[in-house]
Image (cartoon, rainbow, N blue to C red; front, top):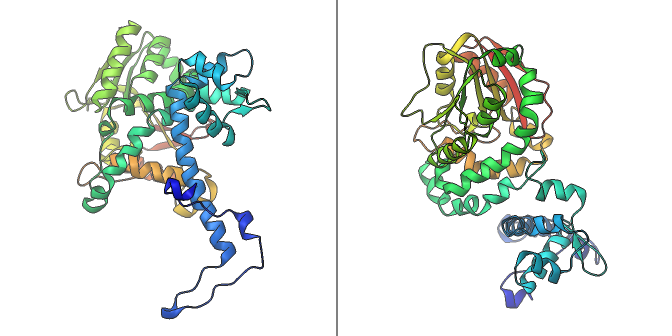
Length: 387
């Protein structure tokens, strides 16, 4: 198999248990021979990362081809033939895909090789309105991995690439990543955690969502608070196009979506509520943005800052975040790349805006009050910041 495929098969930890352990021995030049047990373990660890990457590609296909949706809709476990029939696909391809997914324990398989989804898998893989829905990052996986082709030059020049370099599907992936949780939690959980904000929204205030993406949060709030006025700001033409389409479908009349390069934020302290969802760490000049927010916000206004949970050091992130390696890798391909897409970009990166960092930067921008909200999220931290 390994010879015909051109892929070296990794040695597993089980192989390493056969025979006595050997210890590193010096060789010419002062180098050491690897310990056989540790070599097997390292090789297994390395190829487990490749397995994850390849299985991620299969998850993308399962989402894109409607295979998870078909499994969810089935009244009983499906054979590969039945699954192929339900999706209009070729059975042999579906069978190999299903074997990958079952071997990876993403989908379930019985002794008759019939495939199904556990209730948890239904929520994560096939229920777009469930807050745990996880297909957004897999949706944009091809665009994210395509960025690898541009990375060598970025490593040499220092210049990254903005989110529009990932194309329209990149914007859709971001939308699918964050909207399910926001749709379930923004109105009943997050906004009520802000002191007095819901009452003011009911009465009618001016709201700016900076880095609005496809506009989901803006449209959700605008529907709930028709007396208030909402403006979404973003520099992604793909995200703004999607926001405009969704706005037209919604019929909302208290919303506008604009490019801040054409319609800047006001600088006369007239915005009562500012929201920034998962975007400050992606910005080339986050400190300058915070200063713009300070110029825009009313004296009694509120800034809701939502950003990725992070700690102050790499050591803390690596120790406390089981997804740290994923976060740092995504940062290279996406978040930090965006944050360095200007020659003098700050480059915070995915895990670059810890609570202490956010506190320091907002104070430097002229904000005087900072409070972490008691909002439970596996990914994000929530802060109430005031002038």
